[in-house]
Length: 98
Image (cartoon, rainbow, N blue to C red; front, side, top):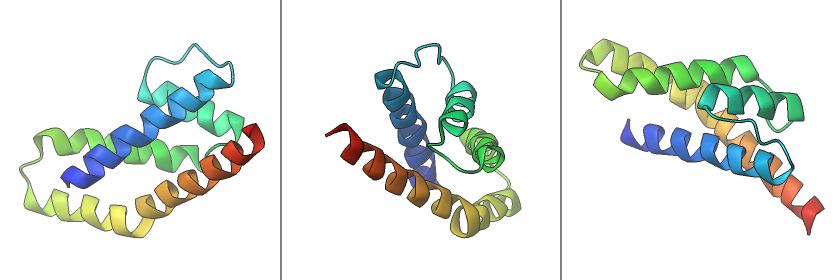
């Protein structure tokens, strides 16, 4: 669960940094970053990213084992794919900058 938390945090902050580099500077929160990244085309499914953010926020004070299992299954089945796609898209965008 902690790996998921760290990975999500690093992902939205990386998106924020990339968007700021491209000139989009009015970004102050993960939700705003996700919306801007979707608008820019950096991510494909903004709603699933918002769902991931909500689940990540739940993990801060998660004491329910069943809820933790549900989030874990989402990480395996959906979120890992979103994170991988972000990595691919950022690599593609970086080659354009070089």
